[in-house]
Length: 79
Image (tube, rainbow, N blue to C red; front, side):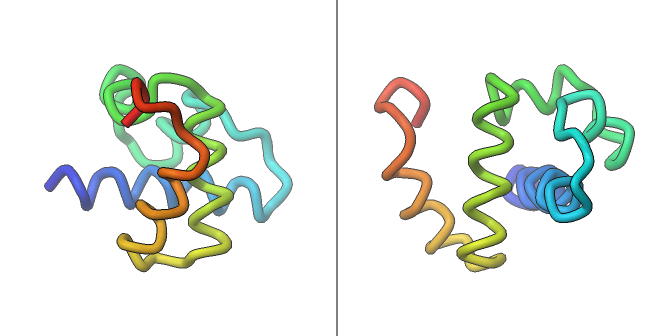
């Protein structure tokens, strides 16, 4: 369930990026019908969400590639 929710959030943010819309926690919340508090549990900052969305656009839905790429741009505290 957690992985699926995370993927839904990342894909929604990636779609907003692709459509040149502002990516924000509120925008993703409205698009996915997932509460902002829940989104902050997965992504503590908007930057973290945008970074993961951009990586998803490059790596695609392959979770292993996405996780490996995320390791390159996150600090140990964010992991």
